[in-house]
Image 1 (tube, rainbow, N blue to C red):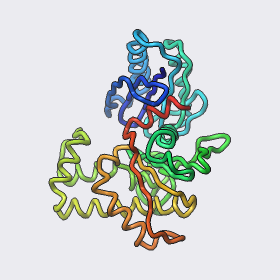
Image 2: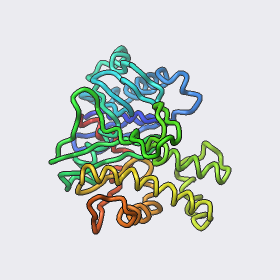
Image 3: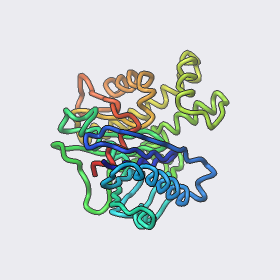
Image 4: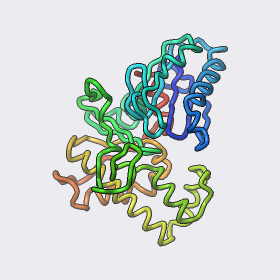
Length: 297
């Protein structure tokens, strides 16, 4: 058995998995705004405590951690959504955890899981995106994960889709994740409806469904899917995938977004090579994809 950890921009999830990817147990904690000033302590304390609880009663071979940003073999080189830079997470955790620890970019982990067990397993050429706090991505060609030599690459969230657009945490303006991430969509809905900023995703979805005929909500959804279609069309034009997989919290809103998104891609004069249809599959492993994929690296 292995422990998979998904270290997201807004949460830490720890799970015990079998060799077939099945999750035997899982626990999760939210990362709050006030945690950011002590983020490394929060990460290390929660992971060490969780691992100790799991290994007390289970024989664990190793640990895999999915982390957003530019990830090296043992270090977080840079994670703008977590506010981390040059952080040797493996070294720090191994001071208290006597197990092999592997780390990889979270979107790559989720993509590996979906390519192995989930929504992309029947396609040899595919693009996978995670839409959550930010936007991550991965590309498979002939069932092989494409990776540059020195850095993870494929930072789809930081391709510029609007010149001189919104300022991104990375320091550039107009990045895709400033328009297509679920965080941005949720913030706009919360602002429009004057909701509690700490509202959970499930409750927010119920509110959006109840107010789906509200003109302001319709406009926000239309603008969001338009921006999303621009970013995704760029990826289709470059990689011409058989299918596109989308993970992250987007999966819970897919019935709201997907019909509009597909229509804009097919009929919005965005694609260089026109298509009659586009296969877009939401992650069948849901938000567990990163955790499961971390055990496969």
